[in-house]
Length: 257
Image (cartoon, rainbow, N blue to C red):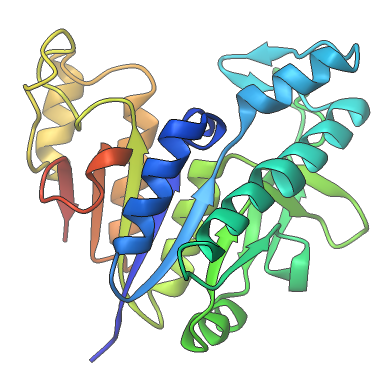
């Protein structure tokens, strides 16, 4: 029987403010067993880019990563944000190791092809070295993964943190019984976006398609749920969409096999 593994993905907003970061670190440290943390850091990158006189360009909520912006996101995601989390976890007796995809060749990507928009140095995940990650986890190490990968040719690539979490969870499902938790600012997927308590506790694929057709689920939640169903199909046991402060509770929206 496979050991349980929890992969938690948190957005930049949670890890960039001291109070919410401390709460997250306490909650994450309390998760029993094997675990992985994947984090964002976009607001810090935007702020530091601005201080350096580099303008941040976004298209549909995604960052255009030119050569100068790539330097900033590498510094911020792989350095400032990642190491703050690692140091905080060490203070809570969690033996964390901060990683970008380039470290130990753990996630390799290909530079996104230019279609309608040239996103610059943005990577689409090609391969996760699950064997190596599983080996680290078996040694009691907790990977803390920044939203950066590499192309194997010496280039770092900015990569969506949701994607990194999903691809890592899928790859590790060969070795573990994986639960993937996407944390965001609501209690779960809502029936009514104006009612924070209207959480849909469980969603099947047909229900999801019906909710989309009825306009109940829309916008950025659609790709998040598409990713969730893909993860389930690829071997992940359960996906949970919930608040970062609720990762140790039974709430949120759950997607199972």
